[in-house]
Image 1 (cartoon, rainbow, N blue to C red):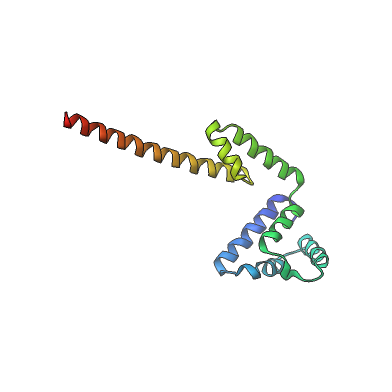
Image 2 (cartoon, rainbow, N blue to C red):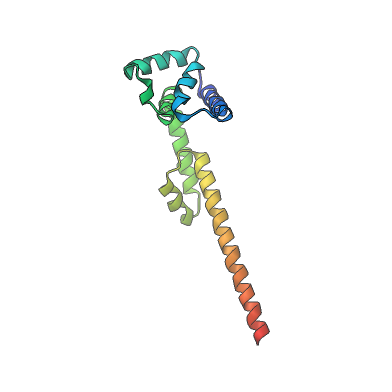
Length: 143
């Protein structure tokens, strides 16, 4: 895994296999390690030694965090954080606080949250407008 793109593709394909095979969470780390090659194998052997050989202690989420830390350059993470923050700053003030409070990890997460909140707000305002016009029509008919 020479670059972050290959690392991301590897992890995505492994998670697809896990979903398809309905791999239990407690077996994901052992299964993923089976698919490692070259640098991945060397990294895992070092990680395993640091854990004293007891890999059952590490959860899938912890594994992914370590994997990202190893195979994604620090500047990629910094760039993603900067991109996420720039996106949040570009939102309307009413959304910025909510999105920041949810602490999205990536730009994609922030975008998804902002879209969900915007759609929710629109649905609520449409309902309110619909109710208002219905009430208004009844009042006119009553007069």
